[in-house]
Amino acid sequence: MNTDSTTTGKNISASIEDDPNTGLPTAVRLIESNSGTINYQDFTFAQLNAAGVHTLVLQGSNGDDTFKIDPNITRQGPITNLVINTGRRE
Image (cartoon, rainbow, N blue to C red):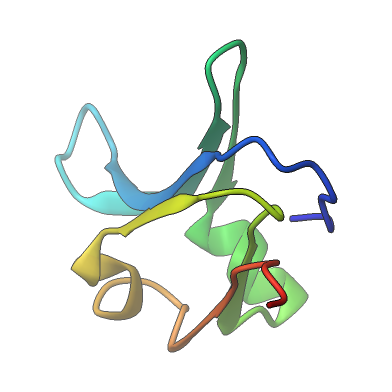
């Protein structure tokens, strides 16, 4: 996620998505929302593995952000490390 200098708080979440046919975990879904917009992106385990991604970095804004991380993010799939940058500097 990109650096965000806004001061309006955001909700940022990371979760595991299951295949609707098999019920097995297949992707990581990232969601960023505020009072007016919702943005999300899915990354399949195959995409993450092919790119050699093992660390998930979540970037907050300069506002009061809320981070929600599914504990299975580091238990299922290729993600083994989690970094949260709150963006706030006081």
